[in-house]
Image 1 (tube, one colour):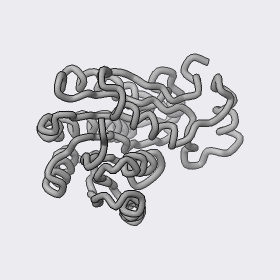
Image 2: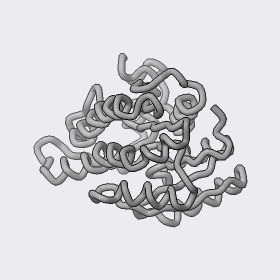
Image 3: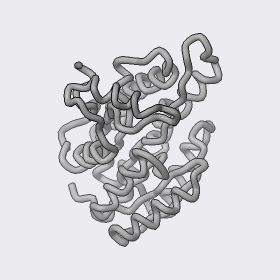
Image 4: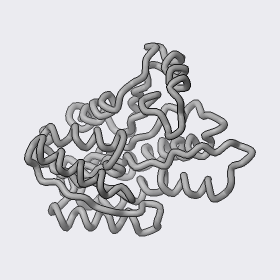
Length: 245
């Protein structure tokens, strides 16, 4: 599948993995809808980078995906601006340390809203446009720890595990017109406050004995979009073998 001229909505595209994924699709000639919540300056820099890379159409879209109508408003705004949506990449994520003894119901609700509920309802809102595309695709960014959780990151891990179920639900609900798959990154980027020593420990725990990169995750997304035309409901790990180590 050629990505030239395709409209790609990447949530959380202003920073980190989302930014790298957005730029990878731009390098293939896609038109980019760059979603952000608070990082407007970074989002605009991504748009500038997209135009520098390919000259393709790109624009920023603000939405609070934790709000009930946030996903619907975002999908409608992107479709009005670009005339449709061909690919949705659910990359926006909340990643907060929540030790078991200190975790609150508010922590739980906040993570579930952004990491599991929003991808579900954003896919629902985008579905008419994705079907109209003829080659609609949804890619969810989960995490290897959805299968092997950390106690101190329980809310995050639980919400990513929920996203794996959402991935399967969407694949069944949107077939056969729309393919839905997920990428499970391993140790790729340090969370805020994590030390180099911690990242080295994480890297040493992988089978490949090294950290991954956001670019590796982006390449996985491109594979799912361009080449995996007989895959839906699948989980693609990009974790250096950490899941089975």
